[in-house]
Image (spheres, one colour):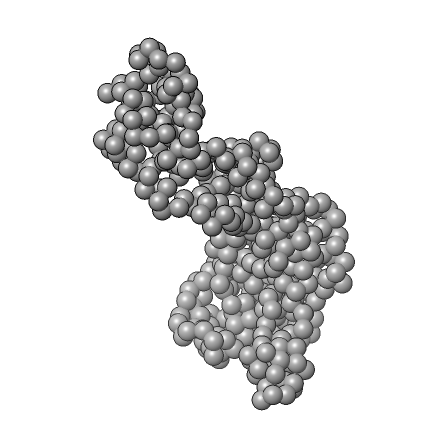
Length: 428
């Protein structure tokens, strides 16, 4: 079977447009559009039959696509209108064909080529031809993985569904005040509803929140507003205790903004906006546009932490004794049962973690400030006071006195085995 045979068999079945004819031969040549292939096949048939081209060129509407292939320009314009003023740099177009047109396409290729899968499907052509026209109209780039916007053109319903994928801002936060959780903490009394037995919840004053501020509530709204999104979700690389500050180089985080209308933001201005709104309780640094892969990268980060802790003792400890006891923990493998303070919400198990380094920073008669660098997941408070023997070894046992943790600060969060958090591959 050659091009002339295909064209002859096609025109005998009824009026068929150049695109549908050329699509049956899409696997026979490169660098041509289906319309160009169809035109060439009809010209070849006219020459072979020695008849005027007009006598075999289609005059009536194509029975295969029912004129769909002639609507690509209009459909592309409709897609752009449906996207509206949303900012995007990557896109993808998909189509839903009416079942009868899809069946026409399948039967046509089977009749002409003897194989319903020969050439190229109409659906695939529609996706490509409408898509490339959208690219020309918007100067955006097609993306088959995770585009900024996805448009689904429903030919039968005459609708266009627009899906706007999330945008992501990476950064590090420093929590400068104690008593602030990382994310929104619903009130357990009213299950976050603010109402208990038809009345305002007495434990949260109707707010539905156990804590009125969180890092998420102080950071995410400004980012959502800057990108004009419908919602914002905060993802952190682990979390510190509510009563702990996060100082030093800060903790990595990603804010995911749903359905953003803007994707280009002034990161310097955004940093200032977030920090102003946070009122000194939290500040962000190193803001950058990120990809969606950054979320899992941050959430799955195996990080070590460095802490500075204020402790007090039940009796006076001289500096030399304290220094030796602290150094005795350095390099040790610590066995920790689930701490009593979190046993109500975490499974009972025993884990082992390593103390990489420990040193005494300051010391007075009955208190001290200690710096500890430990493996991720090491419970620092329990390492110091022992948790009634649930953590061994511990500083209290080394000293033979009661140790009380008065204040704890996280000063560094780094990837295990490295002194930096690799982000380059996940940034725009």
